[in-house]
Length: 373
Image 1 (cartoon, rainbow, N blue to C red):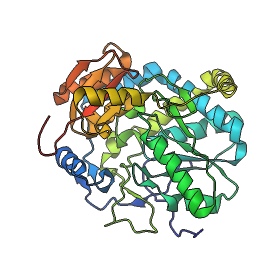
Image 2: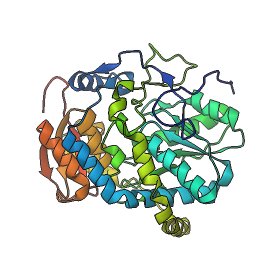
Image 3: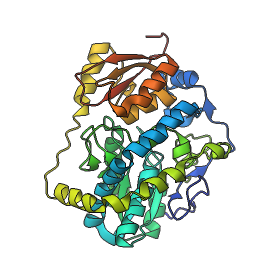
């Protein structure tokens, strides 16, 4: 296996001891395009990872909703982190290296690292790497980690699951990595919430609001989505990302981490019990959310399942950085969809009552290829 000469990028607003970003810094390159132009290109075959959406800056009412939701559900989120962290540490111990999937996985990885340190006084290494649907994981980043931690037991971390595209991508990438380099990696993805039944390592399967899904880079260390564009990324480079330093005044990334970390002392006993119980159960996956996706695709005449994004986290992403068509809503009275209703109203997107849904809601992307629908 080749030794990569890449080094972690000094990007983002997180502390270096919390996470090392194995990304190429593209901050000085203009990669953003309007949502409409990007959507048109993506639907015409240009890969979404070649450009970036313009970062949505929410109005004060939306940011206030983020904080009120976080205050109300911080213990619930912290407990889910604790349950996941306990399972990881009980099964892998001191050899664990946390590898979060940029960018939604990054704050989760930091929180898991902090929980394990607070409860076991063990400081696990934590890296953030890029994985891109249909293009795989950043193998140069994995080689960097393995070269520095040859006896490591890597644990991949993300925020939540939707219909399972990233779980499938990770499994495929790990198989390819073993074929190429003879190194076996655990492809189990650790997440806070798994409403799609896509993994066996989770804090809950309830489709609830993980507050970090509400905002973009301002709750993810001011780091952009990851980029894989041949114009800027060579074959030996890490995948790329931008550091939005101009958003420093709006950044709440470390406030979010600190607020949740303070809850760990209150939930550690329940976290350990929850993890113990789960580790003695037989947990199935089944990707149950795909049943919803297939039914919705047929019912609404949607060309591709890629245009259907189930779950609170994915629906939020549709509204923040895609061209939304409709939002299907199982329960509009749920406290976990208030921000979605606010965004839908702001953007003039129809919210359709849809009680027959495993998830709380589902975002449908508008077809902009040749015609509007």
